[in-house]
Length: 328
Image 1 (cartoon, rainbow, N blue to C red):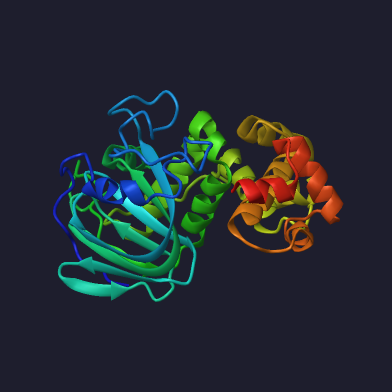
Image 2 (spheres, rainbow, N blue to C red):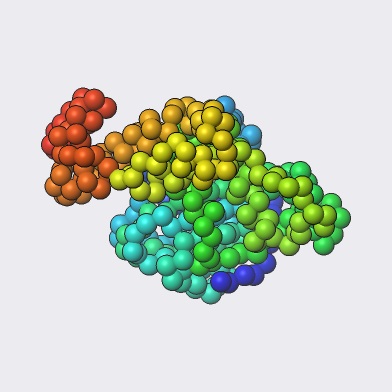
């Protein structure tokens, strides 16, 4: 891990990185339900086109950008007014960060944290699936104040150090959860608030100069929503397994009835319907992006047979797997 302090937060709010990558995005933003939608000429996390629903310019606290890249890409050093967390979600390509003139190979580790105002560039060589989460410095400071974190100087904002090639399971899990729930991220303030809280707390814990409150916290302070979000990750991790409600509730540490109530409020559907939506979405992606036989796609995504996959595609998309593949 490489950790060096950069300039203080507060640089200009439009990150040039977005402008450099705009023509290259496979998924232009998590508010778009169509991954084939043409990329805009410029992207700003405060723009309502990428910010969560209802968030106008300047009001967004968290934005997410998700893209797949194949080949070589050099991104010149840039500085953003947002704290940025980059998460490698897949691909075996090489990712090399450049901070302070020194290259840092990610060595397969999935997370990099770039504080606001720090000049950073990177190079991708090969196949890569990457998500960039942008958190406003104000949101991080608000979390610190709400939880009673304190810094070396009174009333100072949290200061972060750049960190590359870091393993962090909660942050990677949150990114996968967003990628699997694009529409919910765009529309559900409860879902976004849970992700914001998780991301802010992990940054404060692992990458800031702030310390937690000295007093012992009250027992079991964890809100219910992040616990249920962990159960949602469990449903997404292996689509060939269908955990029971009791198993999911136990994983969340909640009674089954309360678990179902919070899950429906968070996801807008039952766990069974939620996993069914993940299955058909994953199946469509494999149909379009690979040449795998349809029977193998059915096996990988939890359908009992190729016929069951075909029925699900006709019900969801009005077309057979063969027709979906031919249309691209």
